[in-house]
Image 1 (cartoon, rainbow, N blue to C red):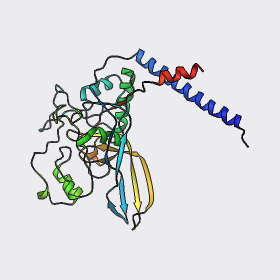
Image 2: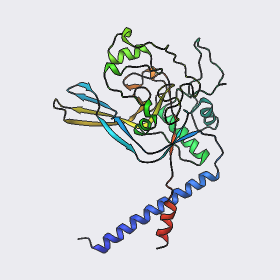
Image 3: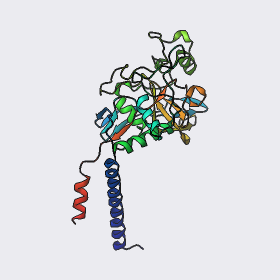
Image 4: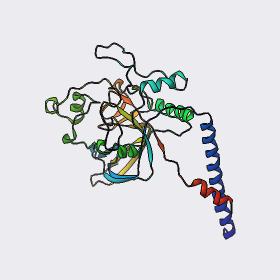
Length: 307
């Protein structure tokens, strides 16, 4: 039987290891910031939010697809979100530094000619792996820890531009990121039934072209689809709705836009056949987030060391 003194020692040891890890992480951040350069990254600070959220993944009952459940979600931490998607120029800086791969897509005009990147447009043709490589590079350059958002975080800061992707015909709406035939295939509708109040144009638009949402974040659910860090899940239910099996596929990630898409991590061009589930987006890019640091950790550490 373990004595009370042993349990107390184990607890103190765990606290000590946790504080040591915190100190080492802080020293690492300070080291990164010592070599950081000034890169202008416009961000929007998003406060903790609660919202209604349809759980992502593929839900199957007796072999037929069904809608995922709707849940109340709460993002408890403040989050710095890039106001714009990562631009082609920003990504090229990472390529020039040797930290990112160069197979991203250039700006191609309607007649197929490649145009100079005079206007700031979002980078497209980047894989999940590419996005993580850029996040690592930007973190090293700025001394701040950048990362892809989770699907819940993306839905939270998308606010009114987060759309329910229920498998119902009435969820079909305007979506500049996928073509009308793609919508027809996904929802089993005739092309003539789909809304046509705007011309579809697959070319990425200048940053800011789709305006900002109520939180001040630009181009959500409009310009391109954006990688998240959330994995694709598959759920199988019996006739009564009871869960039989769940599978986590963490080589496949969620890309967010007007509708969710599930893509293999190495895919740069979803139209080449790499879309794991659903219809592929024509334009695939990303934006990054960083967490608001805890303001009181230093005082807690000092209080512990003073004991």
